[in-house]
Length: 289
Image (cartoon, rainbow, N blue to C red; front, side, top):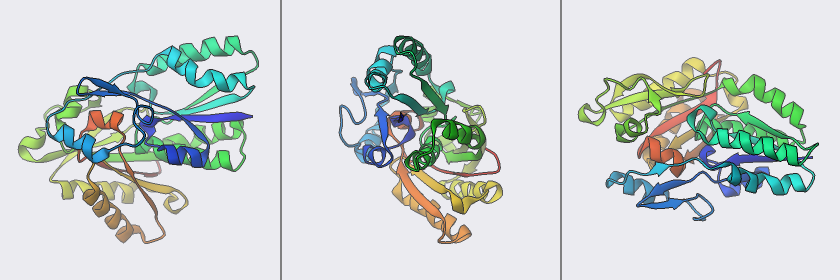
């Protein structure tokens, strides 16, 4: 018997978490001098209000949760005699996973016989969401934790994510994307094309002038790399840019047909604090990342 966990950095909403059986770990951000824990301090994410604040000049920050926070989430489940599988965002992107490791070590010592398993999606936002939902499907189908871990070992690196940033202010400040040097960003209308690599890092791999050229570039990556695409979700994400997300979705349907299982997600506020408004991306099952 085991329980599945994920975190709010994967874009999973409380409604979706309930559908799959996930427990949600809230990853905090601070804005206007106040720390906010998604779906704890706020019940719904006002994405337009949040991203409009960023357009108006707000510069939010994020922080890692500590070992005690993890223990507060995990211990009640272990105390019930159940194991845990935590499907989380890329561990190379945050120091929070050092705290997680500490918490797991202490909890497994306190509850001998119980286990906490983890799956690193090597992604964030929709790069994680696609994998989280696939594992949720397996969990609902009654697969064992060993079967899910075996699936993840083979499949995590087959979910690609490509996106473009509309405003480099936020990524420059966070320092979380390699390869941005020399890109002028808003000054000349250039949008960097970024992907999550096999190590779970964000890497700038190109640039396009203008949003629509950037969208077409994303579609080209899907065309070039897609594998078994009709058997998996194609997830389009946006940071308060629904028109751009629809444009991307429409182009994908034009290329691949109406059988494509497209879902549209809004980038969560913690990840959005780093990418900024009007970011748009796509995640899909691929030959490789």
